[in-house]
Length: 189
Ligand SMILES: CSCCC(=O)/C(O)=C/O
Ligand SMILES: [Fe+2]
Image 1: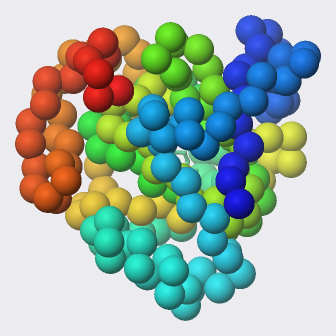
Image 2: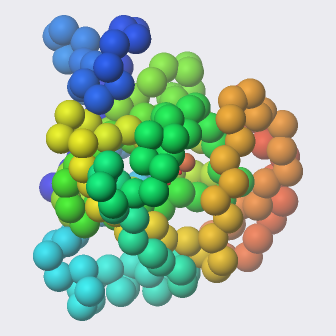
Image 3: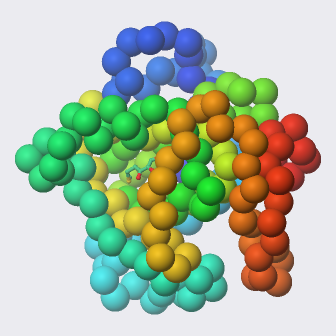
């Protein structure tokens, strides 16, 4: 089972609405993978004892995890945080999120700088690659609970756009690290 994604319209109205074109312009998992975005569907009802999640964490080296509940009654500085999450930004490490309850949207830029909206539902685990411009919002249900995963100690620092010129760490196929000059036009993106 995949995750639903689509190109966003250009309206500035409520970020919590779906913002689909009419007719809808769907984006496939294959297109997402070409941007370095990967997805797993898991059983969030058993996340505490899920062998599939354990295997992914082991394979990918996701040693850190915590859980964030995003709702006006549970998240300190709720409005401020939501505003911050919706600022277009990038990180120098992958962003890995697993939706345990509720739902929300991640928006990512494609190679032509168009916004793709990814509808995250309970059981969706997604990885956004280091260096991709993205943002996050709740949808009209105003609630989600998510596991945040990280390789090693988490670095929460977000670089708001423009942030186009960095030395960033990328993992190569042998899981060692290499320093890559981030240039948005290079073919790895
Ligand atoms: C679902 S976790 C909150 C969003 C977040 O941590 C982030 O970095 C969004 O880009
Ligand atoms: Fe982020």
